[in-house]
Image 1 (cartoon, rainbow, N blue to C red):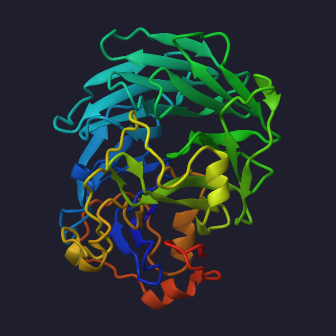
Image 2: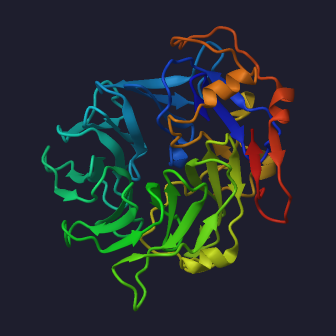
Image 3: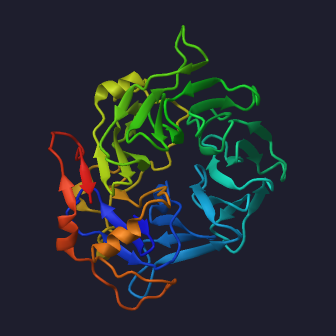
Length: 418
């Protein structure tokens, strides 16, 4: 987890274990944190710090300061989103309030490898296409821009997607020309930019303003996160069934509860493998809320089936899996970052039991909560070098961890950290 005080590495398989704290004091709130999706770069985490993007290398020693391998600085305003490429482990995209989208090659991180700009409105989201390595999308106010790095600085397509600002975009995992957008106008829209830039393929009307909506890594599901007035996550089936209208109010397949405040971020954690074209993966939903709780949700099998997924079924051939061959290990133990845990080596394809609060909203006052818990002292200014490493009090950490009713499952059904 990332805060103004630095990076916290929590092992979700050992929630009572004290997190690893990598100090990096900053006066800036964190807009986003993402772990590299590639097995070959499983030690990289990228986070934001106002106009800069920081690339952490967990294999570097933190004895003399924060293990930051790269500091990317080309934006003139605060960064709003970051995204690792789905094709190249060294490629990263950033976007900011200055309207620019920068594509970085981390092998030559001094300046962006490519730059696109809207000029009229700041960027809120940026996402690489999951099927085509040359295509990238960004949102600017109510407009969606599709860029091709082979076509120069002119957008490949421009879509006036919503009546209010777009706050979420996500590419389809199988169809290269398709992506979704969501907005506070209470709609989730599905686009095929090759077919039409005027009319969406489907529009799901929701009873709440949509802050984020993303395709599930299984089946044909979409998980939506309300912006306000609703503390649940809502799972939708994106398929248009016979008799359904293209634009319609749609009921969620399942509403996932667990927070006493607005949900601020979510991600899916997977474990298992794809062997012989058969999908044997298990999935677990992780959510973080304004109530300062980190929840691990156990989603029943019938809800997976409702969006077209069944464990043990044939995997779709175009599915791009970047973590194939990943070694299951924990970076929480600083002394064993590069070693594989023997007790977990039988599950080599797991996403890992780690979370860096991917995509944390800057509205979450995690830094204040940690400071008040006396884990680390509050600080003003940025200090990238710190000689003395402060050890988090394990008793304080255990006081803040609660585990709900245990069930016989592959994952802990619920974890709350207050």
